[in-house]
Amino acid sequence: MPAIVYLNADPQIAAYYDEKRERRHLLGLGKQLREQLNVDTALLLQLIDRPELMTSEAWIRESIMLRNTYVKPLHILQVELMKRVRHAAETVKDNIKRAVGNHRRYRRQHTQLLLSGRREWSSGIGCG
Image (cartoon, rainbow, N blue to C red; front, side):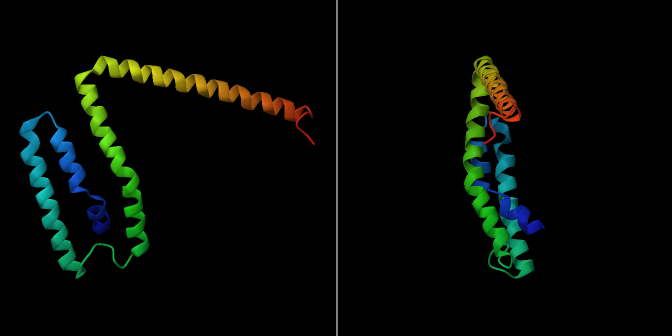
């Protein structure tokens, strides 16, 4: 189980979060945590006597690596969105409200289309 946790940890993404952080006084903590992750990972590899984590569970390792391909861009996007919220909170809130409103309108239209299709089908029009 610890191997999965360490394999999921990404010091590069953590450093990217720190790089964009506005509270500069916390940078030392982030660096310490990344260094501790490296030490702990090395110790775990020594304890399990393997060169890499999860080598005996290749399918899990591969799944995590595949997952990370999709998760990394989401982290980068989250950092950017957090920065925008800090610098233009009202504009971001307006954009979110507009996006949510558009989504609700889409859902309502989609539901109406589905229901109208069901009525046609149930009345025999949709039957072949």
